[in-house]
Length: 447
Image (cartoon, rainbow, N blue to C red):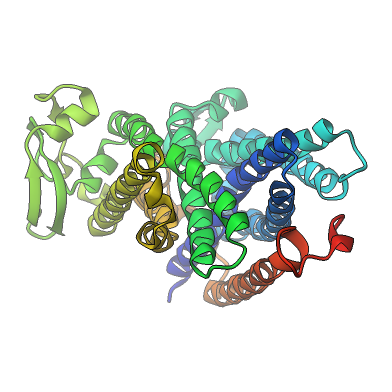
């Protein structure tokens, strides 16, 4: 493994790991705050226990996200010093604001965890809600920095120099809103389905059924918001990509020829040597409509761009297809669940519906990882689109592969620790969190 491949692999692994905790941090506190609100409105102790259980999960994942996020910030300087040298002064503002949001989140989660029966009940609830708001802001600010890499703004590039820097314009670049919107919606979808799937499994085990049923229904509601919002936010993002990065759009669809009335491609195997896609299902004119609201609009093909600026076509295309596939599956599951809620309430307790959510537990995160693969790999060979190539930004320091192995070992260790801690939290539901269980110890109510 050469140093360039090692640096890219390390960054991909770190981002792929950290993004899971970013999404949990953006969404899970809102589930917790909703359960807390239900407790305050109904005085049902089950909701109180659920709030406490979820808050401990939020704390565990927040701590892990802090570790992985800190590692990522060091990796930017370690692996891509040329990038940070020039880009740091331009898009440093969202990172500094993200740090502020992180500290607010840390303070709020401390207040929430230790504020039971100490604060005014609504101030205490607001602390939990603030954890979600600051986590959401933190995620959006990081996405704004990434969006700048896809749509550089806020400076003039003259003779290799970055002049007339405007950090506000850099932060609110043309890509930040489409990316932030799609990322936020995807986070709700992924986290909602993951949490719903876990509680669906626990319902099927016939233990603490009321507790897990309430948890499942809250999580499923949030999952539906994400599932039905994803096509709308995805449409906004796709139109933005078509305007700013037409080569990425062409790679997503493995679209080689420029044509009017371009077809939307489903499946298929791209052949870069022959510059064609095989075995694909093509829906005439749909791609043109999706990118321009015009069935006869022209869509540029890969052949219109220099070949040394092509991203890895197969990787981008397959990742895009995976994202679309799992997104559609989650929409179907959400539609069935919504139908059950309004017209077939007896379905809500059926094992087949619970098993469907159980199998769908990882679907949102698979789609999320695939979507980020499209975003990052689709930008290649550029680290700053159209300005700096990735190969020119990598560190000259040798032995990066050993750093990759070391960081991988850390992330694997963190994963095992998280699984252990969350599993222990689930096992403690009867004793600490579910007041309807015979094992529940009233002395633990303030924990």
